[in-house]
Image (cartoon, rainbow, N blue to C red; front, side):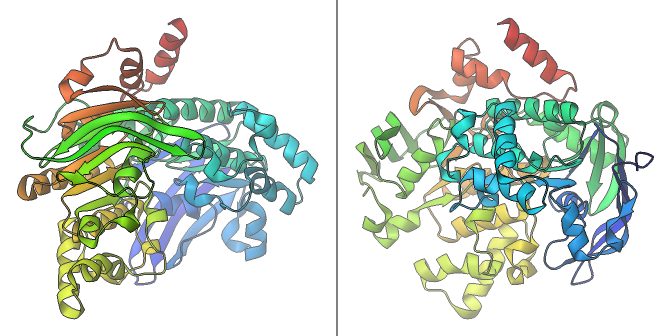
Length: 536
């Protein structure tokens, strides 16, 4: 067994029911203790290959060619029961969306212990003891009692680390990491990367790391495979691919990542008509105050970026404006009048004029409705469109966000993460809003697609006078699209100013920490960052 790679995939072919090849003759090998990064644009086949490593394919997809060997055993020659014995026990999967991966009705401990108990690898008592060890290794708070919590009772970063604990609960040989830090703020992302590197080294597992963030993969991968349209474009050592790419496509990915950290759209700081005003807004969840005394304004044609660490109150502010949670103090005014706190108290036109694009498309889209139904619902609800008129407008909106018109017939499960996020944007635009709250709308997108989305949002703003509240942890995007920036920490506003003013405050304890935590396209950046942080 030890003479074979832990994972050996040869000439993998994955085909959609329609006959389209989603993965076309891709091969890879993984040795113990090594990390292979899979990068490429949305729809390149990264997640499809990652799932195929478990001998699994999404509904509507089929593994139609190639071999998938774990330690010399070809999983494609096993029956389904035998494959299940490998999944979770020998090879484990860490999904992009922790919120979608956990059952909200069960405690974290119940879900983390399920794998080793069902696979017969440990008793419940031993599984709980190992879970506490993993919580400690992953720097989770109060490890002995952390597992008693439910998924909604922990932060996004903590839930992502809990999912790593769930993956490691069976002591697997191979980890499949599918965008595990995409939804995390920059400081939490650093912590998770450090912990993943340490786990892979200490446990000597092999890992597939799927990501669209080249700077992140530079910190953890030994080798990189660049994919496009299901085919291998380029492969090599991480430093070689990122610093000396040999193909036009790889060069474009690297160039876009570099430009995203230096260039900026030309945004004029002009503030004509104020459309939204927050005046000392407080928001509480029960006895706990999540947001305290936040004040800022938003004008037509303006983008205000809201940044801060996980748990700083960014999304809570968004939900209070959208009426999903009610402010417990202060005032929110919209278009010169008081904005009713709850969405049920707002009239239909007010609901239409404020739209929210959620961070997690997997949670935001009904998996049983077609894309046409999802985008068409606001068209009927707000404008009464039906039949051919509605179908035509759905087609226009799909084209507007760069998706084929025929996607209207598909279900969300048949789309990539980036494609699903574009559907969410199209649904918001269907209402023809005045204010669009963008809650991490580019976090699931690869650099080239994210650039197109930013250009699209910028163009729509110029043409329609849209006001954007742009919540993000990607400071490179803030540089490119923000007129002004609001910085939150622990539910309080610590800074508010133009984008240039905020990024000039590198000596500010909190702002400087956020800026310094943005990974660079350099394989040695993380080690240097940790050394500098330790020294300070």
